[in-house]
Length: 118
Image (cartoon, rainbow, N blue to C red; front, side):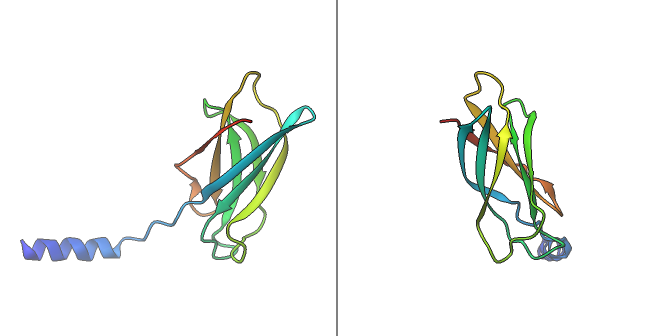
């Protein structure tokens, strides 16, 4: 048994470590004009141009994309950081949305942040 355990441990250590997904730390929103402005605070262990949080999106509760904020550069020295997106059109009667973050290397986070509109 000991031999199998050591082999398993050795194999597990040879697997690549999963990178941390970007985390939505906070969201604020306000209605402005005919749409909404969302400010989203993200954290992610950005390491430079090859690996950084490169966007976030607003989804309705069915998972349909309502707005996308592309982040054009890494923020390795600014964590967490907040960026905004304006003119997001929400379905009539919407009371909640979801925010999902994206990493350049790993794609969309599995986790979504549910936000209740003010």
